[in-house]
Amino acid sequence: MKWCVIGAGGIADRRTIPAILKDEKSTLVALMDKVPETAKAVGEKYGVEYFTDEETMLKSVECDAVYIGTPVFKHYEQAMLALKYDKHVFVEKPIAMNAKEGAELAEAFKKNGKLLCVGYMMKYHNLHEKAKALIKDGAIGSVNSVRAQFTCWYPEIKGAWRQTKALGGGGAIMDLGVHCIELIEDVLGEEIVDQKAFYSTKTFSYEVEDGAVIIFKTASGTLGHIDVNFNVPDNASESKFELYGTKGYIICSGTLAQEEKGVLKYLYSPQGDYVAAQNRETEKPQEFFGEESNLYMKQIVKFREAVESGKLDYFYTDRAVQVQEVVEKIYNEK
Ligand SMILES: NC(=O)c1ccc[n+]([C@@H]2O[C@H](COP(=O)([O-])OP(=O)(O)OC[C@H]3O[C@@H](n4cnc5c(N)ncnc54)[C@H](O)[C@@H]3O)[C@@H](O)[C@H]2O)c1
Image: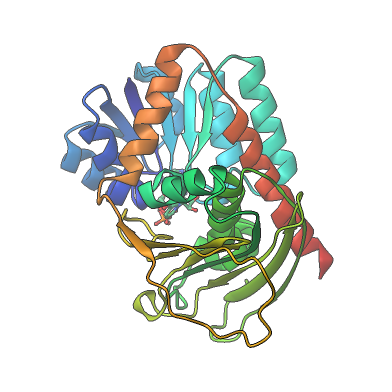
């Protein structure tokens, strides 16, 4: 698969281009960034042709797929442009600024028989796959309580698109919360159907929220909450994903992250009768560890294989749109 990249300077340079290069059946042919120095520096770093205009690149370079790693407000326009040039597209999360834009994108790609994937790589973490399999097997019974936590330290940076509502679409919910929503729905195998949030801008002076607590209910009645913060330092939270059911728990620590690390603790502890004393014994859970492989490469390989197979599946594209619906309901409530 021959790849072009639009928006080469951030996550593209840090994670996605190295992932494309690691996949033996993918090749990077050209890249584009609107900042000339970035286009030149990243182009020279990877030894490929570079551009500062996306249409010029798409007109002059032959490729099969386009990776879009630009700020959210450009996703819709650039994905549509790539489709105009008959390309499959892998766009970073969130799919677009809102559900309407996302739904239009999904529809256009389906109509034209091109794949559109969104960069929700956390579901490919081996421990999240393990959690999903355990739940499917009934290993913790019926899941009744879920918690997900994703934090980072994101102080004021002049001109940062993520700190401007019109460019990023929101703050911690739009940037970090979307990962949690997508992951929870994937692991549980069902959608969030009701949600509310408290959010505020407490630590920093930008206009978007720097922290949020989302509470939600899924279709089957599972309840949970998501804590996302731009104002908790990277190493000051365990970035936990917890699932509690009628027969036990699954607690993942350090797994909501860019690397496939962390640990999953699983305890099977069903209980028959009501025990008034509620004496809690400390039972030892089983432990499983992260594979430390590359989440970004996994998603690139899955995308390439889907295109090669000719069986274009839009399940996760539609889910990415539904994630935006959840986010929109949260923002519209306040
Ligand atoms: N999946 C993940 O783990 C992950 C992590 C970080 C970012 N992201 C997503 O990736 C996207 C980019 O985030 P980032 O952190 O890399 O941002 P960034 O600002 O660090 O990098 C964006 C790059 O795009 C370039 N750019 C800006 N406007 C452009 C335009 N109109 N055309 C072409 N290039 C343009 C910038 O010059 C910069 O090089 C966002 O959607 C973000 O949510 C995903």
